[in-house]
Amino acid sequence: MAWRVNVLTLFPEMFPGPLGMSLAGKALNDGLWRLETLDIRSVASDKHRSVDDTPYGGGAGMVLRPDVVDAAINCSVARFGEVARKVFLSPRGKRLDQAMASKFVADGSVMLVCGRYEGLDQRVIDAQRLEEVSLGDFVLSGGEVAAMALIDACVRLLPGVMGNAATVDEESFSAGLLEYPQYTRPPEWNGRDVPEVLISGNHEKIKAWRQAEAEKITRSQRPDLWEIYQCTRTRT
Image (cartoon, rainbow, N blue to C red; front, top):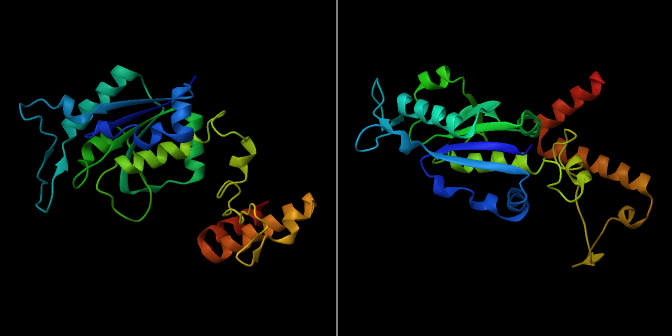
């Protein structure tokens, strides 16, 4: 059965967007995953199709209304089917990582609620048990770009999407490390040579070199990941 993602958004015309191109687009056309979108505004009940209101307690901006978003979630489930996970894209959420993407894929389906304005009324987050997920410590204009990033991270893990399954296994984060440096032809460029070990034909030495480089880069550029990796190695 194809992996399915339901996206709730005020801008359904943004999808599939980049997801309709390259590997994700081919996989979508081949039926390896399904994308369903629902316009949150379509379930608004007043004549102006209002989806937001001013926040209680004062403050700048507007907040997505719980009744409208709740109705959109229920409409999506009724129209496209139940989902294993319901996610609200939010800067205060748990940060998306490779392990989380793998879990979304394994679960088979996910609903992504794209926020706008100052956020979403907490009551619908609690009532619908929405998981909050973030791309990182920064704020976007809305959840659509974050949803696309999450979807792309998941789609490329689906069987049959990548040409070589080993590619996924050797990428950054798959083993808890950043990826080692990559080189291709020509062997010499602007006075810079490809490391000799990579053209030696000795696969054991190549493997050891790549492991060492991955560890060096991770230790230098992502000390947070390096600390986790070290703890994992100690436990094993």
